[in-house]
Amino acid sequence: MKGILSLLRRNTRGTKTLEEHTDSVLFSTAFASQGVDVSMLVPWEARAVEVGAKRLPPSRGGSLLQALWAKDKYMAHLDTDAVERMERFFEFAAVPANRDVIRQDEYGNFMVVLLTGTIAVDRLQPWGEQLRLAETRPGDILGEMSLLDSGIRFSACTTLTDCEIAVLSAEALDQMMAEDPQLAASLVALLARKLSLRLRVVSARLSDNQK
Image (cartoon, rainbow, N blue to C red; front, side, top):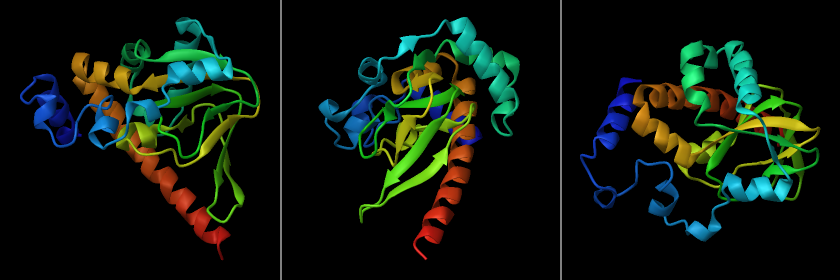
């Protein structure tokens, strides 16, 4: 945690310009620093229009997020005050059933927290098999891997029912880094822990499937 926080503080103090970094420490510019053309990015604004998402009142989205994260083994480390401070960096939306919120092998710079409903997580294997990795429940986080490492999406995430979601973009995470670095450090650390656990589960499942 201290290492992450010191990195965020160095960045927000402007000790180095963006051009002086071989790889950007900003989430919103990390894709470009890895050679990904900006035209290849699929931001939430574009995906929201594509899937017919409708804005949720922040009061509803925020209360759902607080209630769900209070029950989560990892996210519960964020107290009520921290989650309330974080809410303004999220966008809240309602998405109809059978819509691809995230698509496999695309570049996307946002993550999603499922607030209500069910989202399927599927991966098309190189040999053509469609593998259902999970059917998520409220409180689950999707897409954080690409947000953190600026890589392509590992799987597709499709709404199985009408869903309400919270969305955090790379730009919003950078804003959080600048305005509340302690909060941003806590969030990134917790996301990394949850992501590591999920990747272990997925890796074990893929290995079992190939036996």
